Length: 356
Image (cartoon, rainbow, N blue to C red; front, side, top):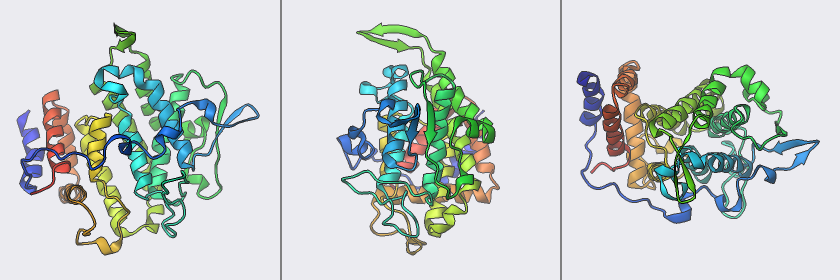
């Protein structure tokens, strides 16, 4: 058992000098940790317009995607009440907070014109169809949403969903259950499995007036990460061309970061509100430029520099080992809950605590 764990652990720890200080607190508190404009929507499908008995969603508008995230959070909260106060234990918070982070850091803009779909503090804007991050997020969100409908998890949606589909890059995306099911059946099944698991849960007890379901958090998080990876795998080859519009430094960081997330997923990394918000403190506050390479830019804070350095080194080690680093890590994480706990501890040390 232990040799499988020692190899990835040694590679991690031998390449990093990690301080023993406590994990620093988030640089923002309270509502600042929620996605922008979170309080302006209520997570109700009725907020979308209806035409010809069809619900119309502009999936390339930030606020419409945010509405979907809030619907999924609100409808699934009851299965996770025992994992965090005030609904902070929902395992979908990681995806939701990351969406807000991408928007706030300007990663949904048009790469050739950063003023198009730029984040503005007063009004929710758009998501450029030329944004690689926007493309990745499209699949993560839409297939999660469509799978929730297909599985019957969202029982209150009786009308057909219509995603507005611009002609540009039309072949890159699927805009309905039928299209996504035909093009990406495995990804749809992975997302559907997450909802089917929740639907299979039974009420274990009643605390006050609140039912507590027999949800196993490791199982729910595992299914969430499995679906997420299936959706990211769709986007990697598809949006490689779109990422050519971005700087090479931002493009490299994107794929390095997504690789690091695979390590997190294998360790069943907790995607609750607090842990996700803390993790994302280190995500660079702006898109990277080619002038940022090879020296880390001075306007990044210590947490951002730590995360950038860590994901780059993880990627380099994985490349040098021909992908064996990730393979061995996954095998080690499959050994037991103890190895998963140790894996999460290592990840926290590397990505959340700045090198000193």
